[in-house]
Length: 526
Image (cartoon, rainbow, N blue to C red; front, side, top):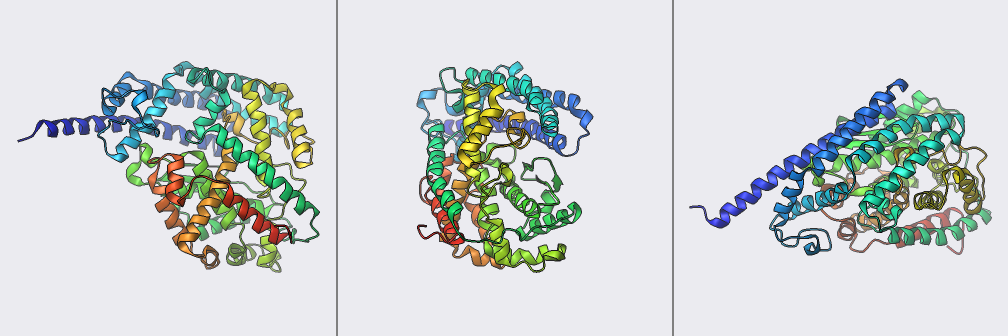
């Protein structure tokens, strides 16, 4: 005979099942929008923008309506317990009185956070932001092609205003930039991000200056020449094969700004080819592999809920940076992969693995482009973007002044000054997406990549030897077990501590950078 407790448990189970079905519907609408966004950047004809903007706006509105519907709120309250209030949730955001299983609590926590934020934003504003960003993409492309910031400036000004309004609805008393940053990294606060960026600036600048003064002569021309796009694409497929990309769940295409998107069942990679920059296409492809590999590694059974979604951008970027820098820029990788390069491009037959390693890690003192930056100066590119967009959102910088301020900061931090808008403030796609607060996660992810790599090496032994043999199953298995399979089960700090045994820290990245570049450039003080 069923007891009262059994009946209550069955009721909770029924409520959770209903809740999960609702969450899956919301997720599927978002994933459908993601495919349309991928298509817009990769395959859609130029004339398709007006219709695509409306399609994406409609899907965004539907998703918002489903999430903020009264029934969603009622299900959340029922699952959290009628006596559970915001003040009775624990520090991780979970309902303290909940009788749900740990995985279910995590789903409720993540949806609750989205629900609370979305409830504060009017549906019409969500639709307007979506339509504006869809229309912004071709405007940004045109401005970049025409090398004319004034073409994009009105759109950028509108996006800044819309995102300020968005932030004000969520928390009118908070720093608007901090509110936007939390969209991309909800569990690392902006103060932590600022501390990390400040430490990188303080410790990398002297290292970069020492490199600039070094007499070491690296082989920087190992990949000089002209390389046709078709063969570069074949080589990109070779590198994806080498690393173990699951072609059954992915594909390779090109885009003006490389990206990866999708789900664990369909995680697509894009890259770009420049006939004079073979190395750039290789590192770009490896970077996007890292993102897609993480996405594919998410648990199939978690699809449709936060348990099947990546743990925000710092963790996502750590995966791409780990594969790009700690694997793809290592000498053992070039010992393994260089023969494939030389088979595709016989003109490089005299290049040695050491030549390739040195070329892949050259520190540039005159580079203006973030995606072409070396591993060290890259973070100063991020600092510049962080400072510019933060001041834009806070109202401390006018849109019309962006090119001059951008150029001034490049001259101050990197010693170079852009001659054109295309090489300056128009080089990145992010602002056309309305993605203010995104840029810091690149550096935060690089820092975490080094911490994860150190922990993996402590568990697995010499990863260099595995790389030299082209054996990546152990590393990938470690990443799957420690990071991928958990989805959003844990908050970012908890996930990091569980994977590495310590709190989030920049120590490993700075040690790695100083050791690696100290050896490359014969720096005695490092």
